[in-house]
Image (tube, rainbow, N blue to C red; front, top):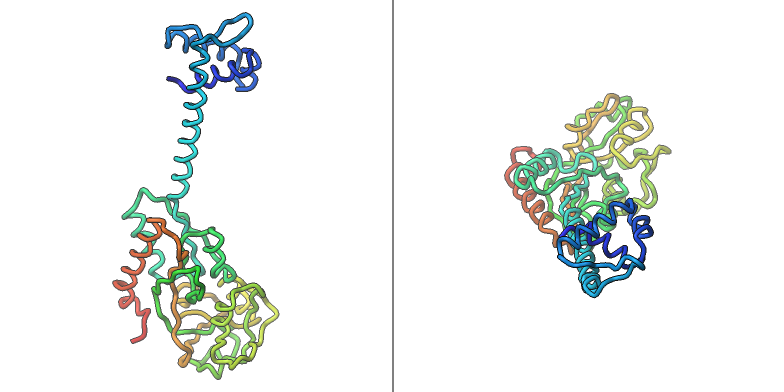
Length: 301
């Protein structure tokens, strides 16, 4: 039974008028009349008395069924639409993510699960946790590991720390530095609402004994903004060692910090997320980290 015909039938039954039913459905009166005649031929009985327009006993019975059928059809469409939307896996990536593991995981997941669409979304420094908590992404390649009960974490890389400095600074000529050499540098500012754990990572807070860092007057929430400010001689930034492979920016130099604790990049997800696509992505990412990590020299020797 054609649902469009049922919709025309129910509109006429409720309006008691073919013309008003057509206006309600944004159809022509002729098409509504044709739908009713087609239904009557299909069912082998009259559904309306025409003068005045009113339901026949058969029409009254069909009206009860029509409401249920159209409501069920609407519910089915909404349910399928929701299911379709839920299958899209939204992958957040802060900066270069977890180095080569990020594109490797995305590429392999697409090959293994072509039925699940993937949307890639860039994250800035302030979205370390919020993008997941606010359901803007389903999985996120971030650093350092969030310390939040709402977030589950899979460690993917463990890397040496570096500082990013203007090429014009004397420090840029050093093959490596120690924490004592860099704590007094003016670091690029991040917004006040940036998660504390990220700012502690960025400014090497563990080595400061509770003292606040010097901060440049320039702000940045993405690697590109930090690099642009550093290239202009405006301040320093910090990162993981793989950063230098992804951001060879003219006018800046990445210098290893020998005595800084090595730090993680992670795949973060909502702790209570039961989405099968999220579980499969996590499993794939951790497997590739085990297989590719040693080849990429992303862990301490």
